[in-house]
Each structure stands twice: as structure tokens, then as C-alpha cells.
Length: 95
Image 1 (cartoon, rainbow, N blue to C red):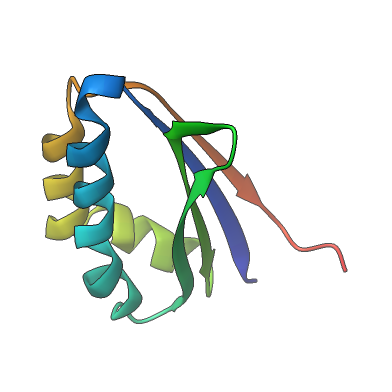
Image 2: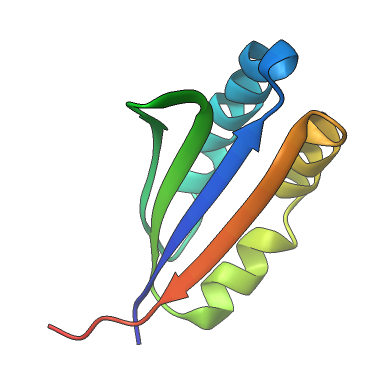
């Protein structure tokens, strides 16, 4: 069953550009993964430190593979200590 993910990453203001670049860097390899249906980066209109990744995956297994990928590990390392929070919400489609 397809699923959606909304990942909200809040950067420390002094690291905003670095966090944003790290998120931009993961777009192409993530979009190239088998089972990735959507992988788009957004920024909150009311807070430029809040970046939101909206993702759609073929199923749970494809998301698990994504989170175990080298580029995901590189993202985690790149933003370590530069964010105030990461909130990940997994969603199942209803209609």
C-alpha cells in the first residue's frame, strides 16, 4: 500500500543555508530510488528555518530501504547538530 511522509526539519537559524543545501542534495538520489513516487522540498512561509519534505513511497519496504541508504545517512550526518528538531509523520491514504 502506498504511503506518504511529511518530514519537518527545523534548522538552527545560523545553519539554515547548510541544512537547506543538505536537503537539496538528497533530492536527486531519493527520486531515483525504486518505489519513490514523490520527494519534494518546501519551506514554510512563516518560518524560513522550517523545511518540509513531502514524500510518497510505493510501500513501507521502499521507505525502509530509503532510510537505510547511503545518501540518507549522509543527510543525517550533514544536519547533525544543526537542527532544533525533526518530525516525521507517516500517513496512509484514505481517499
